Length: 152
Image (cartoon, rainbow, N blue to C red; front, top):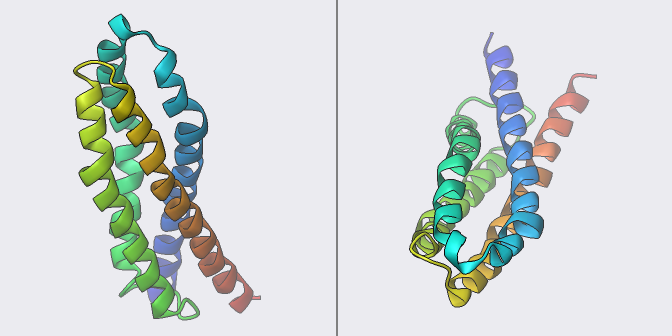
């Protein structure tokens, strides 16, 4: 029973992480750069709608990723080393800190009107989250691969 629960936690973690890898690359390469082309008069309303709608898309997988990252410290398949779960949780923390300390304040400022400096800061600093989620994706895929290989 413990093994089934551990594999379920790992699969949910994998799904949430890979979902966020796809979202962050789309946002970084397509969505954030295009914000500069919305127009000054429409930019505040656009940013407010962006924040509201994006929250519905990213909050559930980010919360699932956080909760399952914590759970993997205690409930993980036997062939998933503790250090990988710990490293994964540390990377989740980096993304959460960056989101709350850097990206959200940039979005809050842009919601009051377009500011090229804050837009550039948003795009430039979001590369950290893009890189971290990409590394997390590889780490979690490695966890899943190890777990599958052990059961062959």
